[in-house]
Each structure stands twice: as C-alpha cells, then as structure tokens.
Length: 315
Image (cartoon, rainbow, N blue to C red; front, side):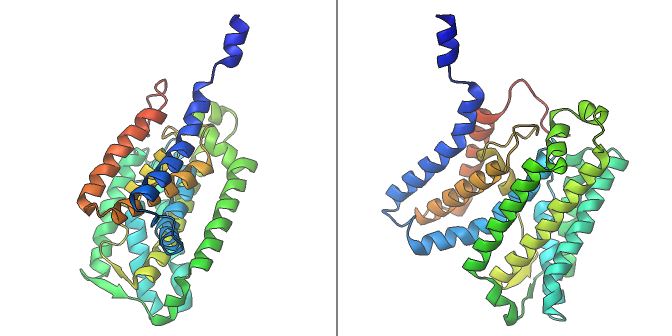
C-alpha cells in the first residue's frame, strides 16, 4: 500500500513547474473571453509581439544572473542610457548605433560585476546605486527631454525581423544555459557558492560575465526600444527591471537561483505578462491600476513558486 501511495503521489516540484503553463493558458482564455476575441486577433498578436520583444530578451539575458542567485535592479536605467547614447550616435553614423548601445551596456555591466565581486558590495546595493546614477546621466545626456532617431532606422521596427531575432536569441541562450560549462556553472553557483568554488568554478569571473552579458543585451533592447518609439527619452526603460522580475517569477524562475532555473521560465513569464498587460489595456483598465494589479500578481507568484526551505533570495 505504501509503495502505491508513493508512486501515485504527485511531486510538489512537478506541480510548481506546471503552474506557469497553466497561468499562461488561463490568462489567454480569460482575456480572449473578456475582449470578445480581440486578444488573439492577428493585429493584436503583432502588437503583443512588439510589446514582449524587449521583455523576452531582457528576461532571457537576466536569467544568467538570477540563476547564480543574484539580481540586477539597474536594467531599466541601462536601457535608458544606451537608448539615448544610440540616438545621439545615429545622427552621425546610423550603422554604429546598435554596436555603440551594446558596447556601452557591456562596459557598464562589467562595472556592476566588478563592484560586486572586488569590493564585496551586495548585488542589490550595487545595482540600485547604478540605477540612480545611470538615470541621472540619461537625463543629463538627453538634456531633460528626448533625442530623435533618423528615419533611416525606422525600417528596423519590423515584426518579421523581431520574431527572427527573438527566436535566435532564445535558441542560443537555451543552448548555452543547458549544454555548456557556462550555463551549468551559473546554476551550480546558485545551488551553492561554496560547493561551486570547491569544484573549481571561477565565481568572480562568472558573476562579472553574467552582468556584462545581461547589460549588453539591455543595450540591444535599448536600441530597439528607441527605434520603435522614434526617439529616446529620459524615462526610456523605466520599470523595465521590475517587469523582468515579474516575468521571471511568473515563469517559475526561482529568485534564489540553482538547478531549477530554466530559460523557458523567462519566455513563458514574459509572454504571460505581455498578454496580461495587453488584455488589461483592451479591457480599458487604468494604467495606474494596472501597476497595482501587477504588484499583487507578483506577490502571489512568489508565494506559489518560492522554495520555503531556502529563504535566501538575493546576495
């Protein structure tokens, strides 16, 4: 009898893995009914893709930080300063706008990682400080307003191009995360820093590289955010880091990192959040109320997916 009970019992970790999929389906069904078929219309699906494009890429790149048990609160400011910098460069050499944005992001991310590793300042303190510093620099560079973008770059705001890029980035990230030493080392650090160090994992280099890659992709997001808006403003990227955290949690990503971290968590969570926001807009819910609803959903998602045995969230 006891063997049958053990066999028939449904593991708790399996239940947690199913929650994000179920949540995505429920959100789609609910808003499809509420909006009377508007949600899944071809036109609206294109809009959802445009809305979720930078969110998916940002969440996927941030996964390499979160898998290590760390966090980056500066991603929104990274998007802002790279977008404004790219906008300025685009008037001189449009072809250098994207490389410039990604290079600036790479350097700023490496700086975050070095401050964290070399000076042993907690990651949330470093990135919160960077958030404020970079937002101030963005306001200064944009002279308190916005910087326009040349018409020649508008053609890059293309749905087919974005779909291609997001699929390629997801596939590359999934391969790196699951089949390379780098991805395995990220998860091993999140599972236990001491054990990872004793196994020969270069903890410092991994953390610096993680922040550098994530910030570089923020530059990528900043560029496409700028192209879509037609300009880069002082508030570009605002609350981007918050949306990424919500998306990761909705997708079932453990904020403490470790072996259960998966790229699919970032993708599913981003789609769920994008559809949720789009559905609320179609339902004519006030934007301020939407922020409150997202906060409540974030708390519920953390409660459902958080490992109560591991109370460490961020370092």
